Length: 593
Image (tube, rainbow, N blue to C red; front, side, top):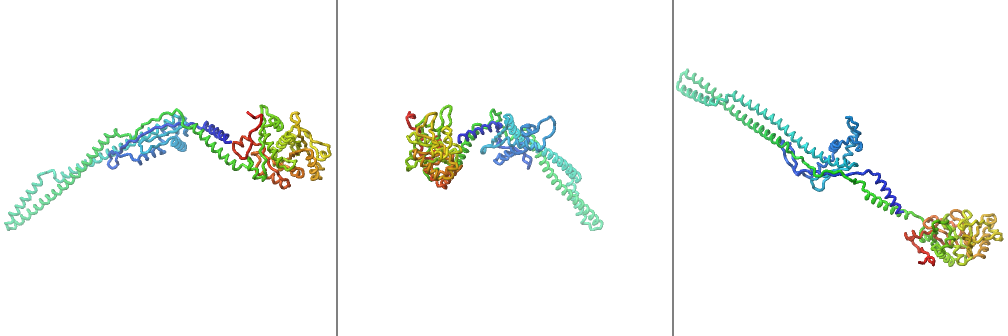
């Protein structure tokens, strides 16, 4: 069973392997740069930063994103690939519906994976597809798309920075121009372009103050009036001087503000010039170091691995099944099991009788005993007969029965009778199985059943047994019918008289009866049978069947002398070690080497 299970599971694994679609695997590798470059958003400048673990893991997440997978599918035209879940390209410009798009993106994400080993900056792209060219295409396209996106992203950032700086320079230039116009207008409006004006006003103020001082000596009213007029002129000149001073201070503030604006404008121009210069020298951020090659052989299915797994699974399944079978098997296969259920002695094992030769003849125990008198089958019967003769205590009538049909009782009866006859005893085989006539069939003879009265009155008698025309000396057979009316009227007296009649003429009388669990014929022979043997077929009769047969015989007052295990497969018994001593090998001149 274990071998068949292993072979079956291995065969199933082989069939499954043949039906599996081959999968091809390709690998490409990209390496991130140690220092990456980007535009700093605070002042729109290029800056470098170190690649950290978090940044690298983020880049791997980007590789596994649906948006990135959609770009890969678009670059490979997978949305128009029916084998990849896409729609058939019919030459029209019709778009792809959202359901198909999601299906292709899912298939694309399932077709590749990105990973790195340890703290390495190298990211491996492993692509799987049923087509080797497609597997290599996916691996290379993922790498190329990532590098292209990284470069485009950097260029886009630089372009945005340049556009911002250009607008900033233009704004600052306009603002500086307006400041210069305002400054020039302020200078003109406040006479700040006349550098001699302050001196002239101070000289006029001094002249007027001198005139006031000369008029103070004259006490006339005209002098006082003139002095007041001059004093008013002094105040006017002083006011002009103060206004001029304030204008100069304002001019200084305006000049400082304009210088600051001019400095900002100059700085923006310089940054713009530097960014434009570095525009064409921005790094890619990553480079491809391994280009995926088209695989020549599929990596899946791995025939050896799967076949080995199938064989191992079959072995495990077979062992488990065998253990479960052993645990739930109620069939009897050892003397211990028989004795524990029946409560009586087991007389031994009778090996299975196997026909030999190219053209095997029907089951014929007498012919087998004649052709090979020293076989294991013959020796086991001889031991059984010897044991019974030693234990029978003078009894001659032995009933052989079983629980159910096909348990070897008729073969046991015929074979035991032949062995006893060969030992010089006069033996009678009584076929009491009116349903199947097992003894008559084994002897290949047509025997008419007779009633007990005819036998007792001498109107019928047993007939000799012969094998292929040769009479077996000392062995006779009788088919007895106990179902007539006369037997039914006085069964006990009739059986007693029949037993006395038979034991006076024969050394051993072997009764072959029907199974006790099928019909009750054997249970009626209490007055005829002196000993009873129950045939138990090896590895077929169950515990419940034997227990039922023993209970049925016990309820009818028939004491069972012992059991006999029939149809023993010596090879399996020896292999599995069911217990009990069994003579497996024949012993005699015909088997000497």
